[in-house]
Length: 120
Image (cartoon, rainbow, N blue to C red):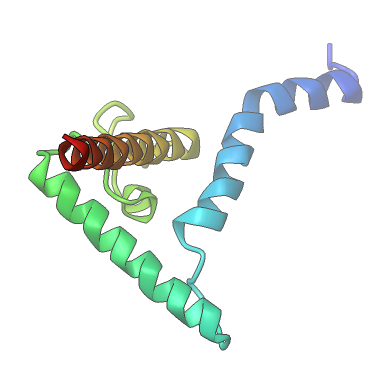
């Protein structure tokens, strides 16, 4: 028996919704400057984005893989957990978000320690 359209759409949204949200975020933040932009703000943003990708790749190498590389690099990688298939978009964004939080926390702690040393 085929489900009615409303039930099928609700099931599809529940099943694929997280993947769609992650794909939208990946397009916005993973590769925002994939096309040439003419505005100065966008040209500067592109350089900063490239620096972000390079720094994350270097941190990934230095940390022996504890920090994930940039999400654009994760897009091109495959996973042993998924039998050599590309990572799902929600996993790519989860790994990138976790690395971002770790980096933010590290900077916060570093600044707090620096301020504490200056005040002591």
